[in-house]
Image (tube, rainbow, N blue to C red; front, top):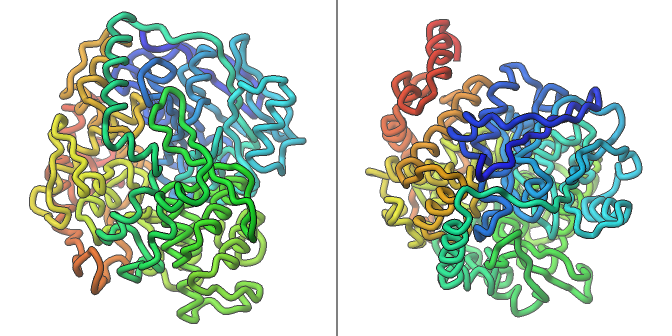
Length: 620
C-alpha cells in the first residue's frame, strides 16, 4: 500500500503478546488514517458496555499517510479510546516526533488491549516491538520518564510518549506527554494508559515511507512548504506562539475571564504571547517537519516561579491558568504549565476545574474546611498550584477535582455551574462570542471541543475560501449550520491525514500530496466526503455508548449574557442552531441518529443496518 507501511502492531497487555497484523486496506481507503481510521478499528472492538478504565477498552495510537514524509507540518498522531472523562468518544491529537518514528519503524498504528499485571512500557524499533518492565518508572514525572528511557536505551533519538502521576492515579483528564511539552491533553487518554499500567510508548525507526509517485510528491511538498513559509500566520505564530492571539481574542470576548463571569480582563497584555517573547522567551520548538515552530521555550531565572529552560504555555493554557483565574503573572502561569505537564494533566480541564473551585469558594459554597484551609482568591496563583499538586496525588479536595468539573459541581449540588458539554470542560473560547463555536461544542464527538471546527479562526478572518468556508458574522445564526458542517468535515479529513490545524495550508497542496503518496484520485469533494463519513462514524460510536441529544446544551452559566466586552450581550439560540444543524447533517432530531439514507450515502451500509436494528428495537 503506497503511502502506508501496511502494518498495525497489536499488543495484548494481559498476555504480554505483541504481534504484527496487516493494515485493513479497505478501512484505510475509506477513513485514510488518524482519528478516522482509529474510530473504524475501535468500532469493531468496543461494545456498549466497554469500561473506559477496563482491560477491554482498546487504546489506539494511529498515524496517517502523510506522517513521516516531507509533507510540511504533517508529523502528528492521535491517541483514541472510549473516554473515562465522558464515557464517549475519546480522542487527542499530539505533535512531536513519536508518530513519524512509529512509521519509520514500519507501523501505521498500534492497538493496545488488556491490562499488565505490573507496570510496563512498549518499545517499538526496526528490529521489532517488545514490552519492557517499568516498575522503576512508575511514580516518575513525564520529563523524568522520557529521559530515563533514553538513558537506559543509550539512545537520545528515541521518542517517548508517557504518563505522569496524573495518569497513574487515573485522574479522569490525565494527558499523555511527549517531546518538548507536546500533549495529548483532552479526554483522558493518560488515564486509559494508567488503567492498563502502560507507562510509556517509545519509538525509534530508521526506515522511510513508501510513496506511489515520489517525484510528484516531493514537488508538491516543496511547493506547499514555500507557501506555508510565506503565509503571514506562520510568521506571527513563530514570533509569538498561539498565545499571540490573546489580546485579539480578549477584545472579541472570546477569551474567558473569572470563570466565564467577567466580560473584560484589563491585564490580558501581561500574559500575552508578545509579553512572553519580550520577557522570558529563550527559544522555540516545533514538531517533525514543521517550519512554524510555534512551541515556546521559556526561562525564569529568579523569583518564586523560577524555571530553567522549559516548554512555555500556549494560548489555551495562558487563558485556562491565567485569565480564567484572573491571574496576570506570566511567570506563575508558566510554572503551573510546567507542573501540569510534569504530572500529565490537561491544562484546559485543570484550569476550568480550578476556576469552578475558585468561583464556588467565592460564592461560599466551598468552605475552607473543604480546601484544607487554603483560601481560593481570584488572582492568587498559590492556591491553584497547591490544588494542582493535590489533584495529581488525589489528596483531600484534589481527589474530587480529579473526577472533573461535573463531579465537583454535582458534589455541591450546583451542576448548572459546571462549564462543560457532555462531561468535557469548555475550552478557552467563550460560546457567547460565536454561534459557530457554540455549534462546535454542542456537536463535537468528544464534547466541548474547539478543534473539530475552530470557528474562532473564521471569526477573526482566517477563512478557507478554497474549501467553501468563508466569513460569516460571528453572531449570525442563519446559515451558520451549513458552514459549520462543511468546516467540521474538512477538519475531520485533516485529522485523518494528519495535518496541523494551526497551519494555513494551500488546499491544492494537501490534495496533491495525498494523491502522490497513495496513488489515489483525490479531490476536495472526496476529502469532504471522507470527513463526513468519519464524523458520522464517531456519532454512531457515541450513540452506542449512550449519547443523548437532550444533553446537547450549554450549561446555564454560559447562557447568562455578559453586559460588556466583546460579546455585546449575545447569547446563542441553541435550539435554533441545532435544528438547522440536524437538517443539514440529515440526522434525526429526536434520536440524534444519522438517517439510514445518510449512512448509505456515506458508504456505511453495515452501520446503516445496525442503525435500522437499533431503531426497530426502540433503543438509543
